[in-house]
Length: 209
Image 1 (cartoon, one colour):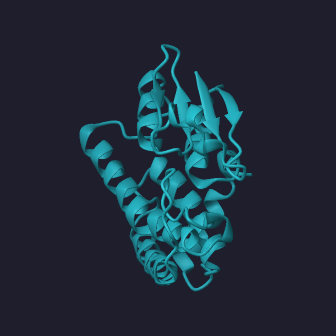
Image 2 (tube, helix red, strand yellow):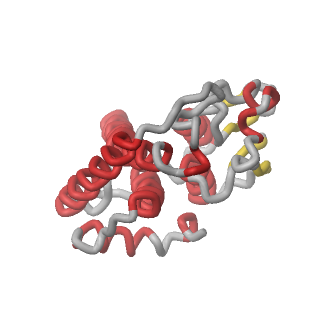
Image 3 (cartoon, helix red, strand yellow):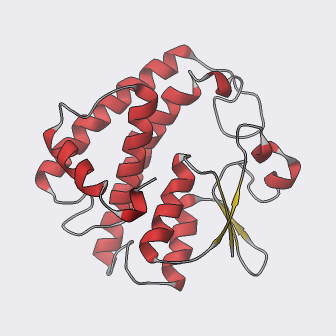
């Protein structure tokens, strides 16, 4: 297997942290997003959306969706279980991963892609030109603020994002949180539960940059 990634980018980090938690050794290839390497014909043949990460399987197939990549890796190496151990737990973790994606990651991405100079004409993933909309950047920042409030409330009721045990939802929440705080310039200081959880998660080797 070979993993195409970009150090520091949030979506690839969701996979590399997962791989680290599993203790797996996978060959990695850095993709230079700044130079537009991911927009080339060659890379689009691997990833229709021209995004990283991409996992090349030994049989020649490519997986280009973060959730799909992690599902595959969990199947071939079940321990430690990060996606759940039974039907109810797997469903609950999937539910929270989806919530984090829609309410946290996409809000931060909306703020970032519609404001960053390097994203001009690339407000959405892919090779088609999509103009930035300033109002969407503002809305993304507002939505991410709501996300912080809601995640703090969740962590007041639960030791981990998806329940009592550590899971992939905690990895995603930490990575989305770090990305979102960086691009929106918001702070978690007002959120006591969220701040305490973030401090605990930062001690995990898989989440140390």
